[in-house]
Image 1 (cartoon, helix red, strand yellow):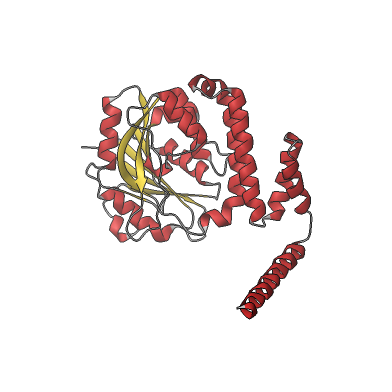
Image 2: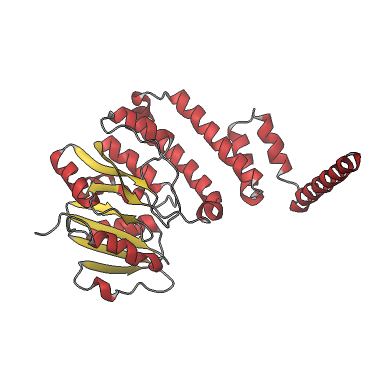
Length: 321
């Protein structure tokens, strides 16, 4: 029996993990139709491994255009009725495909199904996620999704027809592109959930630190895009336009403070002044914007001076004892 699901795997310099990802597809309790690996301009081209012989694996190499473009290309070449997304450094539990296909087949009005995700022994742990109950209304799912993207990209299976109809991933968003797509899909139809941890995400310890500057920028772009394109639908779900604006401001403010206290001044400086242009009455943020103009050596000197004062205080306390 030919499978119904096409698996799309973008890969950019993660070939070391790719074999484990494909093995997790091969060991599924229900066979997939095909596995499309899009080599997104890796430094070393992805090569087929001997262990893949006999598997329906296709490797498509492109120039480096980003994961969104790679996934969109993979879906355009897919022949399955359903699409399952898997990143090259992640993996699935053996029953994922079977349970998600059953969920889509038994619920014709459901356009996509997600599972929960978890840590795997020997992998870095994922943060705990507060999932909505499986019988949650569309409004409840949308409200939670508006506040935070709790749906892991490799946990999703979507109807190919619906994916193409809503336009696929936004290739202008380098980060948060999955979050923006989930909202578009939820506006187009229903989301289902398999309430089991069937997706294993590999969290690299350096990812958030290395890319946090860009994550903040694109998260903000995505948040504004969601308010502009889907603000009325989000309001109908229970979050008024005023609440949307306030939540957006508070979240942006928090992210900028994280950038500032991480001393990421090259990014924070520009974004702080952009924030003040939008919210000129926030005097505390004005203080941080002005401080961000000071040279980096100033903060190092203040830090070193504080350390010296602390050592002197400790020495004085020891003499008193």
